[in-house]
Structure formats: structure tokens, C-alpha cells
Length: 167
Image (cartoon, rainbow, N blue to C red; front, side, top):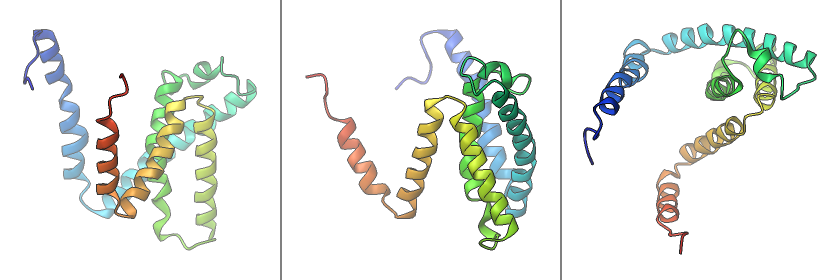
């Protein structure tokens, strides 16, 4: 493994983008160290995201949920439907686990369930297969972690990856 590339430009570009790791991983762990901090961040992201999703789905409904119009209805919030779908599919697991303290079948629980359904509908109308797969894979990853199947799954995956399909 090489620590630098053959091209100086590629090495500099890698170093310039490595600050993402520091900001989004290291500093997140530093600033969000208590449950209250996580909950506050969740709601700071939740309300603007839901606002943009309501606006986008409403505007998209006026076009008959046309694939040709999806990038147009996203403006000015998102650049394209892939960015929009990526954000929704990344936020979906956080939303799924949000109501841990909500009593079942309470008003808040129904609001949460409705928001889950609405977000799934919004992900569907992004017309991005990667977002569909990401949501399914997140559910699968949760089950693997919950049932403590990490070793068998990784062992099976490494055997699968090692197979030679070209011969």
C-alpha cells in the first residue's frame, strides 16, 4: 500500500478532502457526547429537512410525480435528485430510532409513524435506486448487529468476495 500517489495533484487533493474525516467524525464525537446533545442535533436537522421534503413532494405532485421534472422541483434546496435521495436515506435510520421514549399509540407515536411513511414516500419519488437499496441495507445491518451475527456475515461475505467469477 502506498501512502502517496504517483501524481502530486492526487495526493494534495486527498489531503485537502481528509478534513471531512476530522470534522464529521472526530468533532462530532467530541461535541455530541450526551443524549441531550444528540436529541438537540436531531431536531435541528429534522425540522428543516421535513420542511424541504413537504415543499418538494408538494411541487412534485403538481407535476404528476414526473421523473423528467424531479431535478426542477428540488430547486433551490438541492442540486439534483441523487443528493436529495442520499440525504433522505441517510436520515431515515435516525428517524426510525427517534421515538424510543414515545409511548406506543400516543399522538407523538402516530406523528412519528406518519413521518416515517412520508419519508419513505419521498425516498420512493426520488427515483434513485441507490437510496432504495441503502434503506434496505440499513435495515439488514441493524438486524445483523441486533442479532449479533457480525462474525458469520463477515465470514460469509469474505468467502463470497474471494470467489473468482471470471473463470
